Length: 374
Image 1 (cartoon, rainbow, N blue to C red):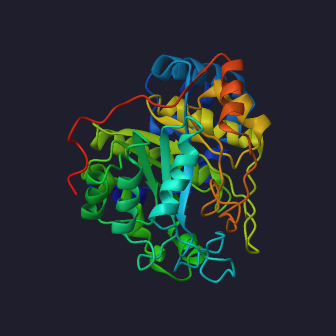
Image 2: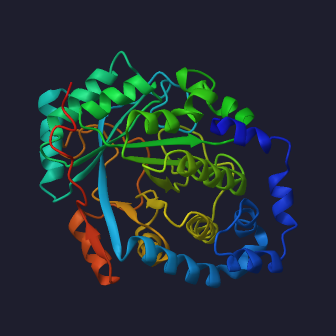
């Protein structure tokens, strides 16, 4: 069974309407259940739960300490290329946007990696647009090989691949995978992706499962909040992780909770997610998925990120630049989107420690010979 079958079970259900009928009693019952059900998760995302954020926060904090301790894992992105053949209406890399395009060569990749490694970070995320003729799977795998002596953990946030292509990247030293479904609403997805290979909703939906089968150690997914009604997309993101956890117990999973940010282009969010609503999403996901990591990016402002550290976050980005070559080259391209928290790695570490938490750069070591077969 694929997750598409789970999604189809709810195709005719008015999820938002059901949530609007949830009562305070339903929410309190959900909080009392040691193993929350799907119905409990739905209740925790409901409007009624918005008035019970304090008990939700207390439970979320307890669960996070139980499963993750007082640790925040830090990472940063490295943009390899911004060439793209897609027409995603909300993305700065949209092929129709007149931005300056660039792709790093081997020397530039190494220089960018060395600049990031000098900050102390050991967890790297490689990103590209979707243009396989410019930035192929082989090119991305080569970048991982060029950088793996600097970073014990290398992830990718790229276009959806086949299982064999993910296996190739694993052999090159890639151990983690991030991919946003963007929205779990198939009709809206088609409108938001009028052209390009990303238009294939089903192929993207199954990509996390293919990454699990290929041997990715960590799989991180999410919806881009603001594209559709947030309660619906948050609900299906949680169901997606729950399905993957049941099916691939050997894999570590995480959820990203990004909100739309301004970018090169005219698109603006159709559903604005407030700070309070973002907190509700995070708390509901932590309670429903206590063993799942939660990733908070620099899309969010510094003050909010600081306040959310004790409430369930386990992974945060730091020292971020969303432009190709932005870490080592002053002549950088336009970024994919505007960041809201420009703080350096040292500044982020200081804040994390001030909250009584430990910034973590590295928490694992690959086995000798486990990567590098290609």
